[in-house]
Image 1 (cartoon, rainbow over the protein chains, first blue to last red):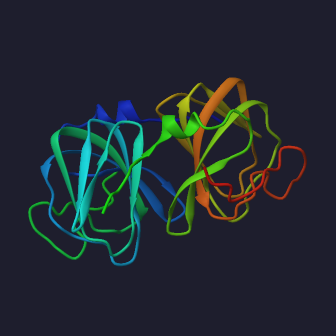
Image 2: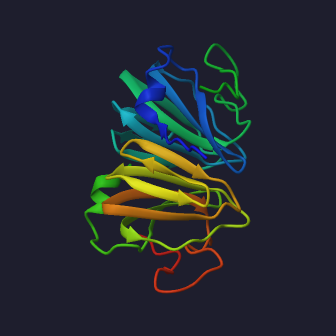
Length: 121
Length: 121
């Protein structure tokens, strides 16, 4: 049988829109999503799950109510469940998110940044 | 408060031994582990969970009973639960594994490749 690895660079080359996570793989009930971000996200949290950010290109800043973290290429950060955070990227950032299937990107908030779930690429 | 991203390159610089996964982060009950591999692993499977391989440097081959996949830098592959596999690396590979906490690297097999769990770095 023929098996094929998932190439992140190739997947990022398939779209240009920002703030719209695309699923590239699943592991049990978790999804790997890639997304391009630029500008400000909104304050939100995820009550029931941690959320993992792995930066592939660019620098992501994640603001917390009491501080911030900068995440550059080849770096990762896990935002604990229930912790309010607001991603920000001055220039476009390419990143991979890992979280359980069905988590809404804006948590319990909604608005123009709320993205469709389960969009595969 | 001061927050710090996890830098994969920095973490890989902290050890030289092969086949000994080190935990660098947790997300809910899942662990992110980094490991250096070279040579042959053993045939095994994980009955209860998928297992994610993300290659950071080098090329990993994962053999299956009916084929194989090559996973290079910036590529990933999810081995489904219950599927027998045997990782192999001609030259040293640096990779990140993602799987639930407590999964034994050799599945139900044991031997010289069986590594301690929950070793953080």
